Amino acid sequence: MEDKDKNRRRNAARNSKKDSSRKVFLGILGAILVIGALSIVYMTTKKAEPSAVQTITPPPPGGAKAEGYVLGNPSAPVHILEFADFECPSCARFSILTEADVRKQIVDAGLASFTFYDFSLPQHKNSLAAHNSAACAGEQGKFWEMHDRLFNEQDRWNTEATDDPTTLMRDYARALGIAIPQWDKCVASRKYQYRIDANQAEGARRNVNSTPTFIIGDKLFAGSLSYDEFKKYVDEAVAAKGKVSPGQ
Picture 1 (cartoon, rainbow, N blue to C red):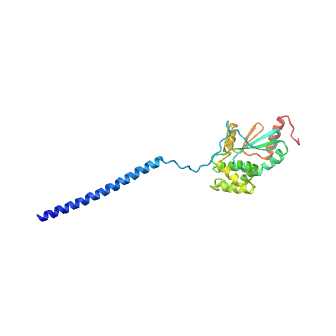
Picture 2: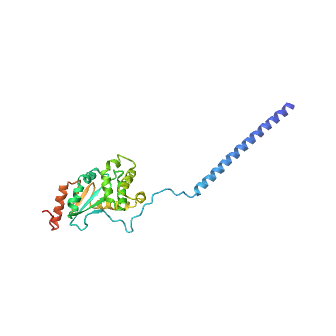
Picture 3: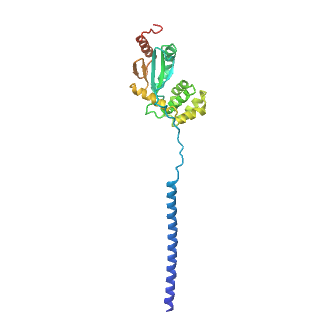
């Protein structure tokens, strides 16, 4: 009889411990569920933190118009238009080998003006960085200096050479005497992207589909031209307007 009482007391104690353990477990589980629910409520009601984004200056009201970069007299009898990509190798060859003679012998002589239009090709991943860098240099009156530097140094900053072209372009800007804080802010905001896009659209409107493309008078020439070809086509355009080119 006494043994039976002892067994009952042992079983009761064992069951009491099980009940206590079960209550503790359920209490912990309940606390976890409550904390989880509160966390979900907090995350869904918490205001999103502002992310670091670049500020992009919108285009002027009414839509952006194409606006190239002009050398020479805008009232010259003939207008030479170049649609070019700063990362295009053929554009660089023209800039380095031929453009100086065109500027000196044709533009400076008053035969024609020369206008550069942005025409960035999608396969050139660093091209837009270059076009924005040049536009921001232009804000400080240094577009053509940056234009020449970018083409001369193309092998250093192109897609095959680097994933960080802006660092090199900042060095070029500094060497040209450009105020770097202003240039940095301009480049980071892509302030003149609307102008680049408008120039690109102007090229498409004129049936440009490769670079470089030149329009001399009313004739379009896809691909690079020699100085002699430029002179020939400019003289023809001048003659067509009833004006005689100097030296003829």
